[in-house]
Structures are given as C-alpha cells and as structure tokens.
Image (tube, rainbow, N blue to C red; front, side, top):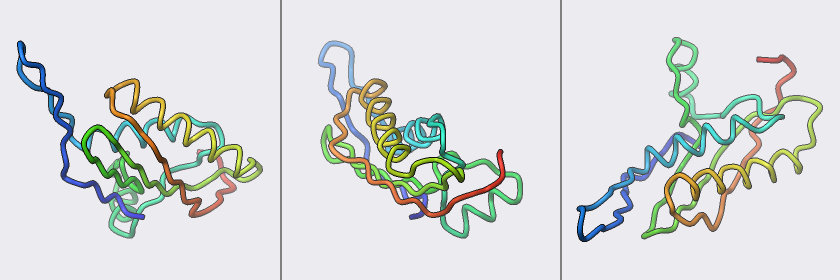
Length: 126
C-alpha cells in the first residue's frame, strides 16, 4: 500500500458561520499518527518512493495510508511494520480501534472500516 490519498474533502455545512472542509490528507495524517501510538507498531510501511524519501531524511507520516472519503464515511487502508515479539492480532486490533477513535473524535466523521496490512516484522528498536 502506498501513501495514496484520495483528493476528496468532507464538507460540513454550518449555515450561520460558513462551511468546514476536511481534506483527506488531514485524515491520513491522523490515521498515521494514531497507528504509531500503539505499542508493537514499529513504523508505517509505504511504497518505494516513500522508502527513498525516508532514507533521505524526509518524514512522511502518511506513508502506507490510503483514505477514501464518501460523504461522512471514511475508509482507511494502511500498511505497517510490527516490532518482533508482539501479538499481531492484538496489535492490529488496537491499531484499528485507535485509528477509528481518533478520526471520529477529531473530525466527527464515521469510520466503518480500518484495514491493516502487516508488511514486515522488525527486530531493532527505534
């Protein structure tokens, strides 16, 4: 999974004050940050372009995160690397819960699914 982010925006109309637009990049950033907060996640895993950016010192928190926004629904696909010695099913369940919770809390959007792909296991600590 690459850091593909749909160019959709969710618009919440506020008749008296105007409108609020939430870009998919914002939702992808929230998802990446939330996943990295879970114990057992080593890093996000992206495509070759993201890996090169990372090796050159660039930081891309949304690498490995794809967000699809349809109305007030957000679907998230993400790819990550796990730390060796952690239970994959437990960590993935925590990532799904944390990502969903943070997106819903911060944006008010509903997250019906967070799909997680474990791309690798790493031995070294960060």
